[in-house]
Length: 326
Image (cartoon, rainbow, N blue to C red; front, top):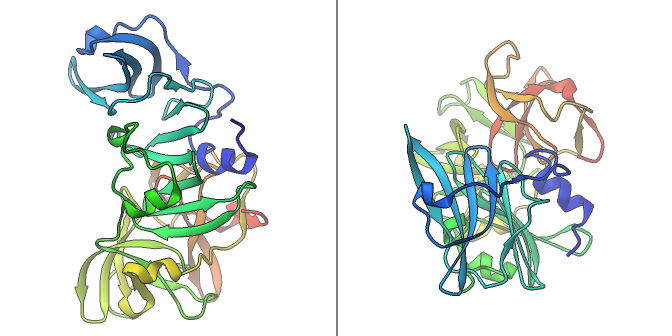
């Protein structure tokens, strides 16, 4: 199957250059990790090894990860078809691509702590998966539809031939909306403050555009304490009346600005604070990132809030992004 260039950039550029692919290794002894069966393929990951095994006529993808000094933990998919295999060219040290048949193609990316989550699917439909939404794509890679929620069956260990969500509607049925909301300003050009404390006089951590997903941890009157991001998120307070919940989330369109990251900056890291002198986050920006908010003072944008595909959130100087096809 052929990948469209847009999908290639959106899903994989945040990892590592794909032209190199992942390193295929033929001399790894799976039994050293307590893995039995016949090794069909093996790949080196940044923090472990992936084995495609065959057992009793079925295949399994198994991931060996370090769990302590000299100790290894093994994670496994369910049973896969006999023709399942690893795409070693499109896999990366932080991502695994699995194919079977003529119409089953799926990418998994490490979202941290060996949490390999479904990122992209080509099967009955083409769709991409972010931590808190799924997006159906047309043949040109343009977004046709967005459904918001956390994909319950999105972990690599959930994958099996019987349960794989091959269509967008199957994936939509697996979305969990519990505790989630999306920024929903009546004026799409406006942005919603994330404040340190639940009052309008409190310092702002950024102003967020419609379409920004948040996890609600607490409600205090007209305020919600929320997390922006999937891992190591920004935490603060947003006004509840400017958030949409449950099924209403699907009716909220994205209002993110059309910005492009300046050339040669995709390997830079996100800052933990708007002040660029502070310690940086250990998250590369990558071309799969988008601007979801801004730090503004007296009408001037001082910094952008950037969210990566995997849900990492941080700040970058305002001049790192310019107007264009972001």
